Picture (cartoon, rainbow over the protein chains, first blue to last red):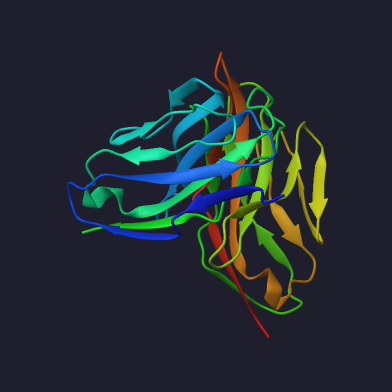
Length: 115
Length: 115
């Protein structure tokens, strides 16, 4: 049972490039989400999904796309990278996003630098 | 709106000292409250949680009590160890209509424990 996995661990992009951050979980969780972590700002929600085929925007969605074709995978796409997207990105999952008591399980993170 | 405020860090303590990290929140309804911990180079993991007023969450010697009257969820440990050095995040989860529960994080408090 690997939990939540993320690839790559590190990535450097040039302004304007696109890329996809991968996230997968093997716990059969319905709810998955992406956060970005910036110094002094905690974690902020980018996008989330309450099940396969269903996604919605979080607090800071601009510049990012997501899709959820399977229960296991929830990739995050940067369409045209900007220096303001330099951050550490975390994927998380929980059994059901409908329960506010649910624990969220986090991946190890992807550290992205945009030059 | 919903928000979480934590005491600013970094907090530096000697081994075996008493730890308090303050956390207060603003929320509509009846949120669940969480403390997550992030060890260096890793993702976040749940430390403890409380799902209703007056509940006490506890784990690994840490504890926090859900105080609705003061809207607080302060983290305490009687005797810290070097291995407790990490960043601690307070978070709340509250239902948003038709969107399930989402985590809202404080900015994080870095703890450094010296031998």
